[in-house]
Image 1 (cartoon, one colour):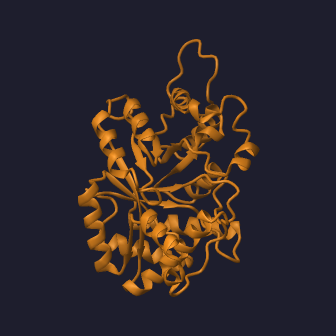
Image 2 (cartoon, helix red, strand yellow):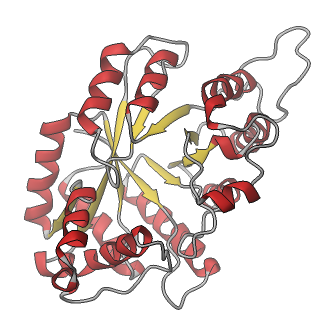
Length: 332
């Protein structure tokens, strides 16, 4: 049985607040822990009115401090936005507070628009995306044991050996994860185009390392489960609206469900949604089971990270409950 985990963007609903979103995230994390999901990850996005997890390490601390057993981490930290030492200290602190429970997924994209990227001072101190492989290796070095004469140390951080994952939506991340011998998480939940090519490349070129002896692939998947297919399709319209708004240059708070929304779209936008959200399973229990079995058979992931941007927190939690009833999350 393939283990299941949770990716939460901590969505800020229309009319809601960041504080409410973060508390709803904690409630979801507690439910995920109770249901047996393996990990609970949060993501770094900036200047996004509908996402509350911009200060990702702080949000993770909020969740980890109020849960007991579930692994908590970043899916991910956009490393070009930061000095590796800072991230090593942040996640070293988390690992020191919550030993054995912290994960660090890192990505190469800025996670924002160009103007906000400049506000993050990405171009000062060598934070360019071309520096990404070197930054990853520097980060891994800080998490390792100290060596004699080491001039710069991450304290907290050194010796914590925080598990580092490479995130990606193209072959670039797959190549790097394979070369460094790190686990690989592919963002198929919103960028499925290179899914098969990237995962095949990663598995083919993987080199065993001190961190991992064989390739390990986690795939992102949208799962919107409800008691009926019709209810699930209605819940799914929140994500559809949010995605169209984002691609139209008007990101906003997560909209409430809108009956008949797909029928209001022009053919170009309808085709966009069908294309980018094709790694989505939406429906009642029987539909979810068929879709999940098909996804696993087609792509053979080692783990699946499930995301569900559902407007109503109770309906979102219910979606994960239905999924856990169909497929025990801890795997075999």
